[in-house]
Length: 155
Image (cartoon, rainbow, N blue to C red; front, side, top):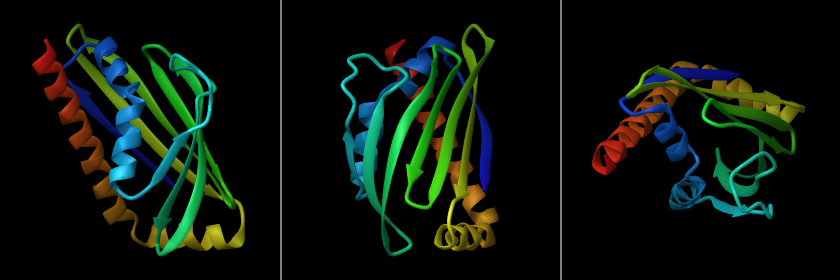
C-alpha cells in the first residue's frame, strides 16, 4: 500500500532540509500522540544509521517498529525504512529546488505485509484508502505550511 503527495514550500531547499532534520520534534510529536519513541543509535550528527524504536497502538493492538535512516543525501533526499513483526515500510522525502526561495517536497509512504495478520491489516486499510489518502495529504500539507511559517519567522 502506497501513499504519495507533493507540497511546495516557500523556503530555500537547504532550510526545508534542515527543518526535516529536526528529528527531536518528530519524536515529541509521536509521544504527544501516545507513542513511545527512543533513539537507539550513537550518532552525533544526523545521517545514515540513525535508528529509533517505537511502540504505539494501532487498531486496538500494540505495535512495535524500528525506524532506520538508510539514505541521507543533503539537501535532496531522506529515506527511512521501518521494520516490525510482519510488516516492512519506507518513507521518503525528496526535495527539489523550484527557485531560490521555493522547494517542492515529495513525501512517499509505502507499507508491505509479510504475514497473514499484517496482510489482513493492510487489506482493511485498503478499504479506507480514499479517506486515509485525504488524511495523509492533509497532514503533509499542514506540516509544509508549518515549515513555511517557521522559515518566514526566522528570515
